[in-house]
Amino acid sequence: MIQTIVVAASAVLVAVAVHEAAHALALRTFGIPVHEAGIGLPLPPVLRIQWSGFTFTISPWLFVAYVAPHPGYAKQIEELRFRDRAWYLNAGIVANAILGFAAFAVAAMLVGRPWYAVVASVLGVGTWVGRRVIAAYVLPVVGVPALALVIVALAGAWSRGETGAGLNGLHQFVEPGGGGAVEFLGRVSFALALVNAMPLFGLDNGRVVDLLLHRWLPRWAVGAYRTTGLIAVAALLLLALGSDMWAVVKAVA
Image 1 (spheres, rainbow, N blue to C red):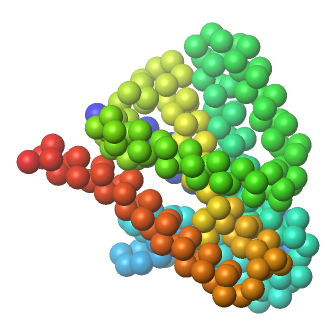
Image 2: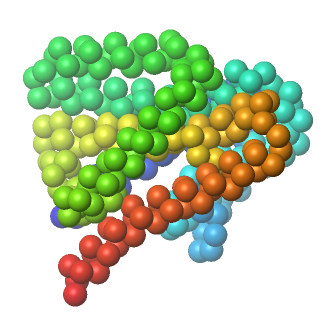
C-alpha cells in the first residue's frame, strides 16, 4: 500500500512539474521571466523558497499548481499575438499530452508491445511538431468535448459506486514491475491535460477561450463566463475529491 501511494504521488508530482515547467519555458521564449511558481495553493502552511528574485512555494493544499510571470511584464504579455498568448497558456496541456504518449510508449516496450510504442511515439512527435497550432486553434474547439467527457466519466464512476477522482482504486493501476507505474504516469498526465482542456475560466484552456470571447462579446458577457467557469471548476473539484474523502470516512468508520 505504501509503495502504491509513493508511486502515485510521484506520478502526480512529475505530471504537474512538467505542466508548470512548460508554462515557464513558453514564457521564456518571449523574454518574460517567471516571478513565482508553486505546487499547491500558496496558503499557510507553506514552504517558501526565494532565490535571485524568484519564489517557489510548496503547500499541502495540492489542488492547484501555478506559474506567475513577472508583474513588470504585464504590458508585454498583453501585446503578444493571440497565437503566442495561447501557446504560453496552453503549453502545459501540450506538454502533458507529450508526456502521456512518451509514458505509454515506454510502458508498451516494457510489456513487449513494440507497435503500441511506435504509435504512441508518432502521436507524441506529431503533438510536438504541431504544438502551437494545437494550443491556439485545436484546444479551444475540443474544450467542450473535453468538458463533456469529464462529466460523463464522473457520472459513470458514481453510478458504479466508485469515487470521483478514483484515489481509492490506485492499486488497480499502480503495479510493481512491468509497465504499470509508467502507464499510470501516462494516465495521470493525460488526465491533467484533459481537465485543463475544459473551457472553464480558471483553467488553462478557459483563459484562451476568454481571450477569444473578449473579441466577440460585451464585457458583461465575458464577466458572466468567468464567474460561471470559476464556480464550475470549484464544484467539479469538490465533487470529485469530496467523494473520495467520503469513501475514506466510511472505510474508517
